[in-house]
Every structure is written in C-alpha cells, then in structure tokens.
Image 1 (cartoon, rainbow, N blue to C red):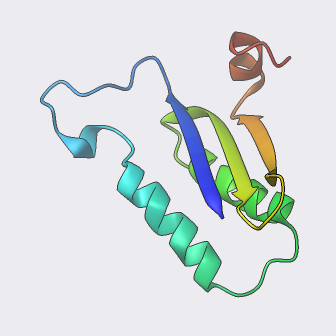
Image 2 (cartoon, rainbow, N blue to C red; image 1 turned 30 degrees about the horizontal axis):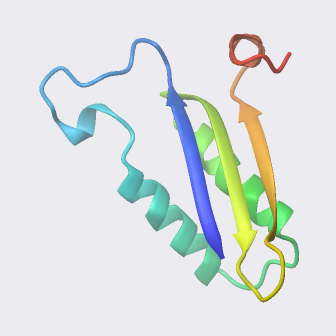
Length: 97
C-alpha cells in the first residue's frame, strides 16, 4: 500500500524559529497511519483514507487534507483519493465548494 497525504496549513501557521513544534509534523501523520494499520483489519481502503483525513483535520492548524491510498498488488494500480476541507471557507479556497 502506498500512502500520500497532503495537509495544508491555515494561513497563520508557520515556523518563525525553524522549530517542528510550530507546525504539524509529518512524523505524527506517519505514526497515525501506522497506528490505524495496527489497530485491526479495515475492509475498505476508502474507510482507511477517511480515518486518516479525519485524524489530520482534528489538528485545527490543518485546513485541508488530501489522502491518496494505492494498492501495489499485481496489475494496474488501484486505490482511492479523498479530499476533505476542514471548513466551508477552506472548501471555497481550494475550489471545492
């Protein structure tokens, strides 16, 4: 399975001092994915993607998330992509509402 997560930050979120604590960490997102995977079987990749998106959006510094999961089994790539804005304003900003 290949995972791709794009998390967009609120405009007022950035690092002044080049410190990771000032912004959401990709390490935290990776840990989240590993935790969900170890939490038991999930029947649908769509459900897995939705859970990743929901957890990312629980961080109020993230305004928009795109989660793409691809099965790397034999044959053509198969998977799902979910795009979730945190708010209606974020949806409009990214052309989704």
